[in-house]
Length: 144
Image 1 (cartoon, rainbow, N blue to C red):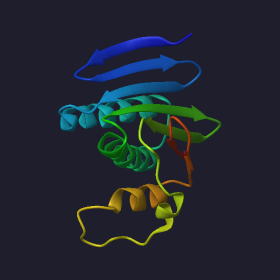
Image 2: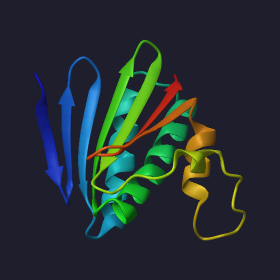
Image 3: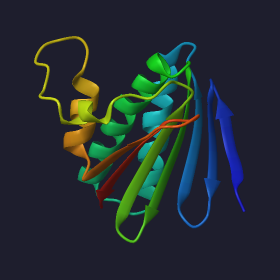
Image 4: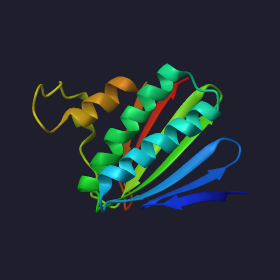
């Protein structure tokens, strides 16, 4: 049974057994909300025994994916993080139109202000998958 643990400043946290965390993020004043997403994801992952190195990579990739979802997906993002069998899976959903999955393989854009997020996601995580549909998602997985 899922349990809502907290709601503060536009970030809602729901924990569900066996090891699943769901966050809902609204885009207004996104800076504080993104910090809340990073802190909550870190807290959850460390509580599940995930290594510090893996936590750092997953939290950074998650941050980049949520930024993109808020910017291009209608100002709202749903995040689900699951730890199971030595693997962290994080899924970010939004209300946008999705994006071309080939962008995950693009070279690093250098010092450009845009485009580094997907590059980081694809290099920090073991697997990255984009799904289309009415609620596009970016699913990322990494071994703990």
